[in-house]
Amino acid sequence: MAADVASIYEFGPFLLDPSRHTLLRDGQPLRLTPKTFDMLVLLVQWRGRLVAKSDLMNALWPGTFVDESNLTQTVFMLRKALGDTGSCQQYVATVSGRGYRFAVPVRCQTTSQISGLGQPGKESENTAEWRSIVPRQLFGRWPAALLLVLALAVLAASLAYPRWHGTAKAGTGAARVMLAVLRFQNLNGDAEEEYFSDGFTEEVINQLGRLDPERLGVIAGTSILGYKHNSVAVGQIGNELGVQYILTGSVQHSAETVRIGVQLIRTSDSTHLLTRQYDREVKDLIQVQAEIAQEISDEIQITLSSRHGLNTHPGPIVSYDSYDLYLQGRYYWNKRTQSGFHEAIRLFQQAVDKDPKYARAYAGLADCYAVLSFYGLGPANDYIPKARAAALRSLQIDDSLAEAHASLAIIAQSYDYDWPTAEKEFRRAIDLNPNYATAHQWYAESLAFQGRFDEALAESEKARQLDPLSLIVAADNGAILYFSRQYDRSIERFRSVLRMDPSVTRAHLVIAAYVQRGQFDDAQADLETWRRTSGEAPWIRAWEAYVYGSKGDHFRAQRALKQLQQLNRDWHLAPGQFLDVAYAGTSEKDKWLEWLQNAASNHSNVVADLKVDPMYDPLRGDPRFHELLRRVGLDSVAIR
Image (cartoon, rainbow, N blue to C red; front, side, top):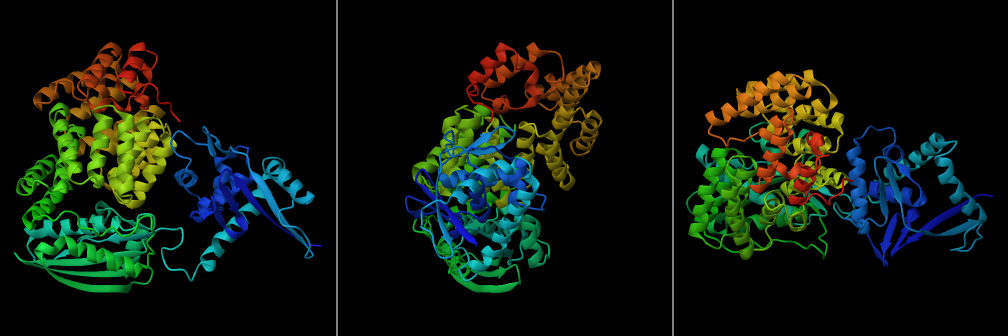
């Protein structure tokens, strides 16, 4: 006699029905991705017990090798859906280094139908016995067999899911549609006009990114740069960027008119879903972007939720001259060089001089001044007040600009050492534009500095999804792995970046990971590779001092330290530049601590990673180091 038993689980305000693939909160349905939903079912069924990371990964991704960051991101998405984020993690508890546990009481009701008989809501003895035995046996005598059965069930459900929902419109399910906007072609043929087509591309990306962020993800501009002058098949782009659609376009303009052509293409079969041409006067350019975004949204058939709606309001009207200067400024900003930042500042300043109420140009100024300081290209006490003033002025005009909120966040974090304000501003930026990859990238780093590694890696994965080819985003992901002492994974990530571009400074943090692993030959080999792109630069000598000192060659460490100090004078840098790294390889702890104390007094961003960088382990037993952590607001932040 066959039995058909279905369980419904209640916890807090939630009701979970696995058989119908639904989760209700106070009677209202919540959308979860299939993997997130499957994870919730597993944790609820194994409630109260530790579920190892490896068991979860085997169950959710059977027979497939996946990075552990996929599990971390799925946990983050589940916590977000349950409102279980921040310091209040009521439902899904992390068991440090081991796994997760569903921590709240669960009420279970079943419907038993045996030969047409049975009463809804009444639990049979067999069902009660199954619920008590399965979790125990899963980690007892037969874990492999039960995991295999569970994995096959999960796999079958995941394969069936698209068929169940095959008739729905794209975007109405839980999964996000991903779109890449390739660089618009400059049909004017004048290389000096590249800023206009590139700038317009960025503007279209920004407009699309604000349409319906929960359902439409838009790849960041840095990841599509490599396709600008290359003829790459649509299917290949789809595979490399993980997108279902790409938008291509062209721009041709004169002093008074602009012609814009766009094509929306489905990557799976190269079908052209939309071909349009817009002829407008330049004064209407901002509104044209909104029209393009609206039509693309209709073609992809995104059903806009009442919560987000369609944000096509072009914002305050600005003059074409100011807008043109702004586009030029963003063109130079994207070069990420010292000369590029200074040229962008000049252009953004001209834009606000022409239109003092141009909020986005003020946000551009804030970005330039802040990053100049944090890249070590200028004194913080000179640049950060200018960055703060520009960001505040931008938000005074238009409080909805994610870029300005992100700038305020990084200023609060790395100059004020005000971590709560930084968190608030990062979250505000992401709420305003969840497709802004830089906000996710910077917020991930901020979380890592506080030791909140699970959250940091989840946030970093969001940045990588939105900007999959960005080397700086990938390098920052490696840095988070290094801070969390996952050295092998961080080395792998750094190496992948350096294979593509050995000049990416952040990725040479691989040297520190090698030192922590005792791989001094590898550390010195990377130094030699870096020297070929940098020459005899001060930072090369600083890292030499660290590597030699860490391996016990104190004579060479001291020699490299003296060479660093001479190079700082030759390069007209601050006398103590890069000494934080060099002193880490010497036995001069008093000088090292004194230098760090001075750095904190001068609001240097160098001290932002004191809490988590393994390089500072030799100082952690010194009371002066604990006082330094207190000064920069990191003494009460627990590493997770």
